[in-house]
Image 1: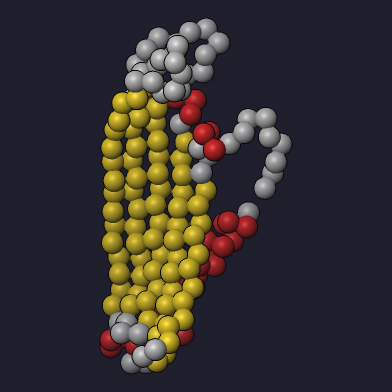
Image 2 (image 1 turned 90 degrees about the vertical axis):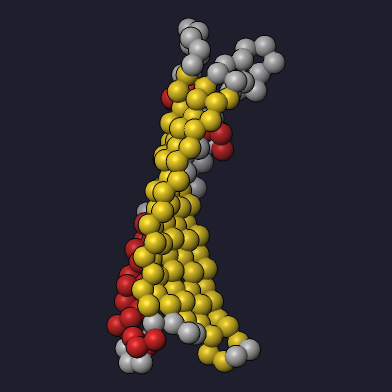
Length: 148
């Protein structure tokens, strides 16, 4: 819940910045909107890194995103968001009791907020915040009861 609140606050700060900085800023500044997408595939011939039971798995990912921002000569505010979707596909037969590779599929969200203001030639003030939510099974302990 705190992650959503943080993301909403960052988005509102980004969108309300031009309202609070009215004046000559609009004559000098420019909006940044850069959509981006990354796709890929790879084949692992030993997915579980086992010496005896090798398993071939194809991995496909799609990673769309967008960078939003506003910049002037002395001020830059950006929010860069990525959605990363990973899909695993078994190429070998699955033994009884063995997990299928697609049980490891997950979706990841990443948002990077950056703000910088340079009031003088030798002083720059900035704020950076990274929001990263993932359900990557490789980083999670299945026996853990932790909620944080």
